[in-house]
Image 1 (tube, rainbow, N blue to C red):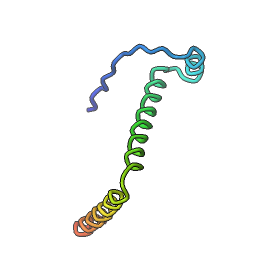
Image 2 (cartoon, one colour):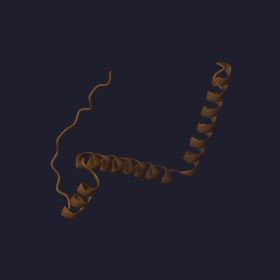
Image 3 (cartoon, rainbow, N blue to C red):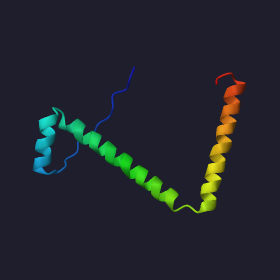
Length: 85
């Protein structure tokens, strides 16, 4: 049985034209705002990750590549040995 999602009521101020546009294409503006916030949040996380990796030293990037290749090799070997690949 699925647990109901906990929601919290908030109050925001938005441009009147934007709200009219949203109301015109959806019967549930709250869901539209929530979807927009989820998209914005995901973009913020992606931007932070991108900035982190772009400021890495080349040696750190190479270490990450090497570690990823090692992990992939190990996972392939494990899956093969378990007959799962």
